[in-house]
Length: 391
Image (cartoon, rainbow, N blue to C red; front, side, top):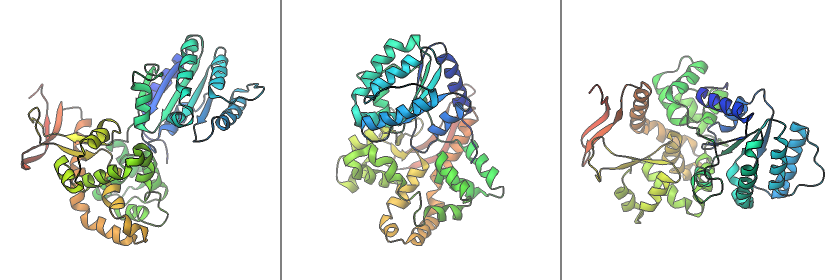
């Protein structure tokens, strides 16, 4: 699939790279897995000299061996003897940047936390001493939102306040998704478009998979998701288990209930028979997975609150893949597809509202957009748009 959108991010990265020729710049790029961080970075550096380090979960010395070979190859560095500590390699690269401008990309940067957490304070010390006399364009990318936020936004952490720019890479908007679909399936209908919006969640990797497999109608997309060896079957688990750690089963239960329209704290607690306030708070504020929705014009302290899963694909995964995992585990994919087809018109209603709210937001005509309802879901209005200046 060709490269879409991201013009603003490409411009930001270009401006940073130009500034780094005068003095070193540190950029942090955060975004969930598959959202397109690495491809964006590489696209911005198509004709530039750069080093790319991927932090895999392995011994620090083994990582250094890989990184040293990359530095020798890309920068033509003469490195004698062994380098066993990342701090020594980083110091050498900063020294090289005194006379040579280049970009250093460290992907999955948060993984250093499990390899050797002292690396962050060691890097901070080397960076602070050398950044004004060097020409390094340092890009630190990570996909575990909670850890990346802690590393760079917690005032007690050594790298707090060091980044000169922070990019939070988000999902493709509806304009981009419609363009992708139109470029690759000119005969799509409204249901195909809504399904593409729901099933990709705007995630670049998922859109690319559907495009590559030419699965661009509602039924073709379902066939691609619900089949043996499907990329999508374990995807929710692969993305979130590392975020949640040992308590992932409780988080998964809560997300399954939210995806199944049990969107109030009271409804969730009545089913799970436990207090979930702390879990909901972390899902919203630490993990950035759910969002609290209040009706427009609700009074301060109003209890008319519901929770929604921010990413469309994750909502679908918890509603139909995780919920029906028993059928999937015995290979009964047709059964789950039939459930999706049966429930899709009702299930997709919320996403149709969400689609038009996003479309209205992109018009830049309104200062407030949302929905309205009173206690007990009385007097419900799907979408209200308000321009507070023009009334």
